[in-house]
Length: 282
Image (cartoon, rainbow, N blue to C red; front, side, top):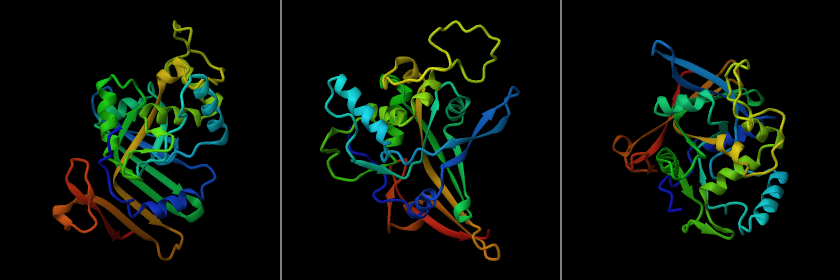
């Protein structure tokens, strides 16, 4: 993989956000997209999703790491996991490509919003930006374009793009996300099409419920498995820990021409820019 073209330093909101996320027993959030109804009008869609960490910084469960090493050994491959070369400020979720959210992301140009309520610190976080879906064939135009957009939000931890363990690979990263699911959860990607009536005749005999998947390269499950990467453009933090004195901040990614050259990072269109922090009324 070529050098990432993303921000040179972590976003100013990232440390506080990450410290709050670590306090959640199970980090989940509301993921909102834009859809169109039968009349063609824009309508909101929201659902709860599990936070899967920041792209490039996946923390593997012990069992997932064990399975990766075992199965990659069976496939005669030397590196079951990616070297720790990249990091980012881009939250991720995983999903089935047949889910409505994937279609929403594609039809809206990626417009999404993620809302976290972290009761442990009485704080709400809102992350607005663009989402990109990866995990398909690298031969597909949409997959190549999505990877290029994700790369714009990645930054290197070293200067070379390689490290002990070999070169970083998109395919390996997606397999790591798949491995981090339990066998039962992996099996859900072999269910019949989500949202379809159970009364419909199911002609594809490879699709069924109740199967635990241990093969990290299962062709049916992996055909449907996707990673959704959110590239933030605006972030808000609402602190309600003191009811008599609530506080609220907003960070917006803006062009360097508007704010000067100090603390600049690379903007999505290649221009220089930076995160601008504003304290606002709650």
